[in-house]
Image (tube, rainbow, N blue to C red; front, side, top):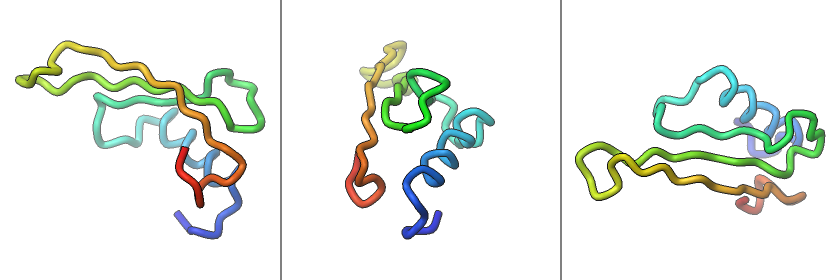
Length: 75
């Protein structure tokens, strides 16, 4: 992704990756809280703990907020 890409286009690209399962790690998923959120601000995520670790069989749910300064400022 281009560093100077406008915020909305970059977040839309991230959403496309999530929706089309272009993630290499299937234990991680994410998407918008509400499908019609045109601001791309509020996201949710899920991480499944890796097998054979202390985190095996655990599911972690995240709330992610991508502010107006994303990607210059992390969510």
